Image (cartoon, rainbow, N blue to C red; front, side, top):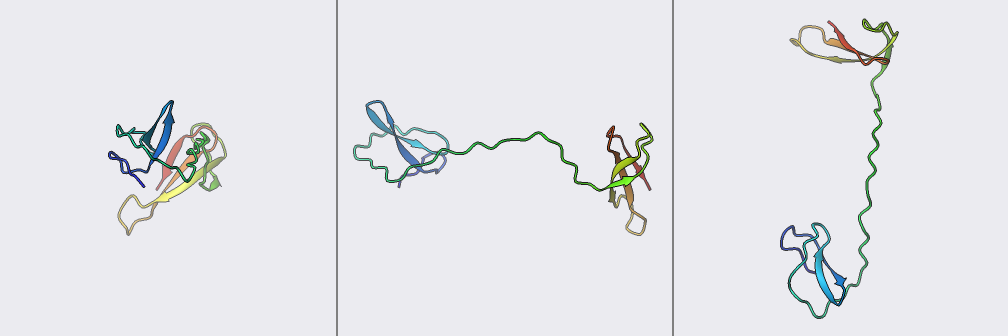
Length: 105
């Protein structure tokens, strides 16, 4: 097994017309050395492409809270400790309709 000089990835032989070159499967670096007797015993599958889904998913719980901006009746909420530990946490709300965010102490 031969490894890439640059990244350390596995180098595999590829036919380039009349001659065979050693090409890195990770970075694509092609070796300048000529190898006469190369045998590929395994087929390397090309990497699968990852699909990016641009969909916003809200995982916060919903409550009945009126938005001060658009008067919508539903909002997401979460709580954070923004002040000292002996004081109550701050509750944040985000409107499900317009996205306006506000807080209550």
